[in-house]
Length: 67
Image (cartoon, rainbow, N blue to C red; front, side, top):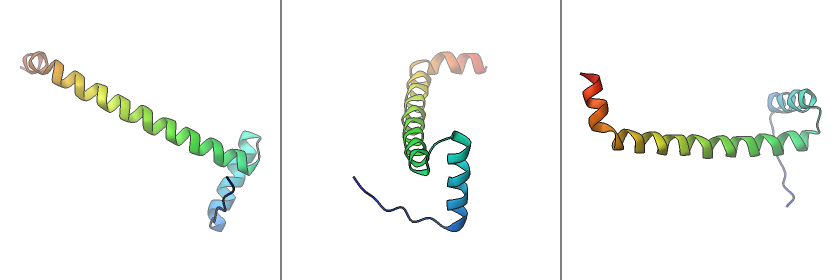
């Protein structure tokens, strides 16, 4: 799907630096950034869920250890 991305001059410079540092086109740098951001969000949500489940599961043990 084609899409237009409107960037400020500062964002354009940042994208150019990112693409250059990665040795890829600006298009590829944008695609990678989106993919990495999405993966990070999914991972963070999963870690949060596992943490919450662990705290619930071991609540009594955690309370005893805190004393």
